[in-house]
View (cartoon, rainbow, N blue to C red):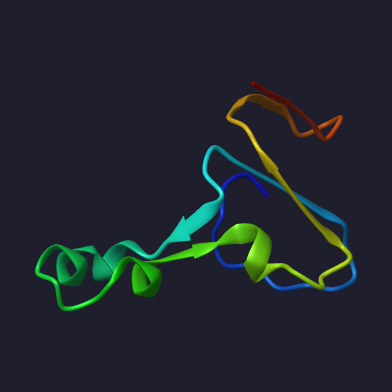
Length: 76
């Protein structure tokens, strides 16, 4: 999986690569901007979200290329 989003499965190994260590729920950004919500209501830590999930590894980086045939990604 490239980028933090919505996913749920226990029977596969997942390496999640994202340039940030958080998942931002964009539909709430306007409420953050108008002070109706705080930052913790809009963004959650990816590592904390998957804590205890032995099949998920979170890495910080930016994917610059992907080869679906070999399942290899190039990141910086």
